[in-house]
Each structure stands twice: as structure tokens, then as C-alpha cells.
Amino acid sequence: MSVKPTRTNMRNYDLVLLSAVGTLLVFGLVMVFSASIALGDGPKYVNAGRYFFFSRHLVFIIAGIVACIFASFVPMKVWEKYALPLYIASMVFLILVLIPFIGREVNGASRWIPLGPINFQPSELAKIGMIVFTAWYIGRKRQYMRDMRGVLPILGFVGIIALLLGLEPDLGATVVVVAIVFGLLFLGGVSFKVFAGLVALAVGGIAGAILIAPWRMQRFFAYLDPFSAEHAQSTGYQLTHSLIAVGRGEIFGVGLGFSIEKLHYLPEAHTDFIMAVVAEELGFVGILAVIVLFAIIVKKGLDIGRQAIAMDREFNGFVAQGVSIWFGVQAFINLGVCFGLLPTKGLTLPLVSYGGSALVMNMVAVAMLLRVDYENRCLMRGQHQAASRRGQV
Image (cartoon, rainbow, N blue to C red; front, top):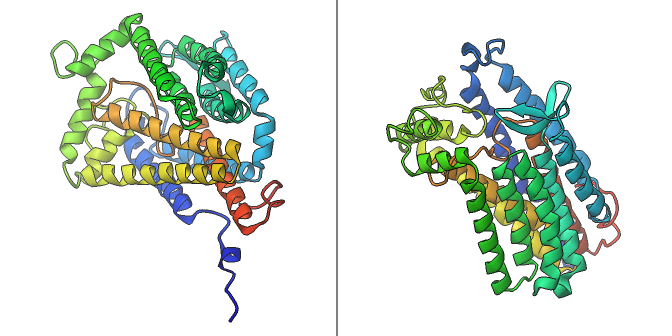
């Protein structure tokens, strides 16, 4: 009796992972439309129609899917080869955004470079750059990762990126980038003692950044008591209305499209605080569904990374795990801010919030995850050459 060659019938992709990403994209499109439909009635977006943000977000999704398809054809060896140039490019763009007449300043922060009808956000490129560079670094210095000989150089590299992000200023992106690097160092074999020191260093850096900036101190005190008379109509305004939206949603929400807080009460309802609208319209059920989808993506990414490392593809594995850390940490911070668990910070929800360069970079990260998974599957089939050349994912 012949043995059925089941491994040769293995898909080239993870259907559950793709389904979770696709569901979040469609869900984000629907919620961006719902959260932004009334913005054209206000003075800030007086020339924007009710479909303005919906149509632009749809274009961003299409652009992100195209970028994902192209990036998925790039072998991981190419990413590894250009890890250092990608880090340098990230650093250059972070410098350019700080130069007057190149970077665009909004509300006192220079975080965007205008490119015609769109704004490019270098911090999103920096996240991918640090994932690839850190994975490359750990692969080269794995034998030194248990002590400070291996850790100190990468601290210098991430310190430069963190400094440039701090000058924008963008504390949220800084926290995400540092979390990605420290998380990869932990997975790369750093001893618990060294890792604990890194965490203490990070906490001290965040505390210092809050203490030296008066507006951050105000946000922190507003986070502690957002409904106080001192903060409710000023620094705590966004958080109070976010919490009101969450409270109105209860278990099943008030119904899709029936949010009141999005009607010019809750600022940035279609970007940083989109989950507040989700909570109000779809309730706890909607929140839980989003959390489950992100949990699937994070778990799949960690599993794919672990598989790659087990097959001696350490760079591939750390890239996959870095993408998981990115999505997991940023989603946690965004949800924590919306629900009052963390101080207010401007960070979008990956794959869901309105945004051009952020969404495209998210999809490039998804492409790298899919590519690592594809190369894992090729190796499990015994197709060693296919795992290293261009191939369809």
C-alpha cells in the first residue's frame, strides 16, 4: 500500500494567518468609514465629503496589498543582505523629517514627509528597519548574546533611532521600537539578569522623557484622574470621551453607525481612538473579536519564527518574531490608551486605523511573515533551493 504524500500537498501559505489579516483589513475599512462619516461636517475637514476617508483608506489598503504581494517575492536572504543599508535608510529618513521645509509639522511634532498627495511617516520604516537589523545582528553575534559584549553594540544602534524619534517627538514609536529590539534580544538568548537591566533602563528612559516634558506630565496626571474638573476639558478630554464611548457600548454595542462620540466629541476617532468607536458601536463583543484576531496573528508569527529557528534559519525566525512583537505591543498600547489603562499616546492600531504609510508598512511586515512561512514550508518539503529563490507565496 502506497503512502500518500501529504506533505507535497501542503499550502504555500497559512490560511488562518491570511484570514486574520484580511478580516482586520475589511473590519478596519468598515470602521474607518463609520468613524469618519461625520468629519466633513466639522470645520477641520470642511472640504471632505462623507466618503473622503473611506475612499482614501480603500486606496491605502489596495496599495498595501500590492506592496505585500511584491515584498512576498523577496527571499529572506535579500532582506538579510541589506539589513545594514535598511537601518541606514531608516536613520536618514528620521533625520530628514527633522529638517525644516522637508518634514511636515503638525501640533508641534515633525513626523511626516509630504510626498505629493500622501504623507510618509519615517517611524514606520524604522520599525521594519530595526526588526531586520536586530535579527541580522543577533544571527551574527549569537554566541555573545548572554552578556553585555553582545548587547552593548545593539543598544547603541537602537539608541540612535530612539534619539531621532524622541526629537520629533514621538514617544509612542520610540516605545514600540525599543520593545521590538528588547523582545528580540530576550528571544535571542540574553540572560535574565541582563534583560532585567534592559527593562529597568527602558522604564527609566520613559520616566525621564515624561518628567522633562511638561505636556507629557499633564497627560500623565490626566490619565490618573481624567474626569477631574482640571483635566476633563483639557488634557483629559480625549480619554474621557473614549471612556464614555466604551461605557455606552456595554456588551453588544449601540449598533454599527450609531456612535454619538464620533460626532465631533472624540478627536481622532478614525485613527488613534478607532477602538473607542468599535467599543461604542459593537460593544465588548467587537473588542473581543479584535483582540482574538491580533492574538492569532501574534501566535502565528511566534510559531513561524520558532519553526524557522528550529531549521537553522535564525534570521528568518527572528524577523517573524519581531513582526509579532511589533503588532502585539502596538495593539496593546493602542487598546490600553483607548480603555484608560495607559496614558494617552498617539499610536494607531495596526491594519485597522486610518493611515497611509503605516498601513503599507504593516502589509510589508505581513509579507515578510508570509515569506518566512513559505520558506519554512519549502524546507519541510525538502525543497531547499525553492526556499532561497524567488517564489510565489
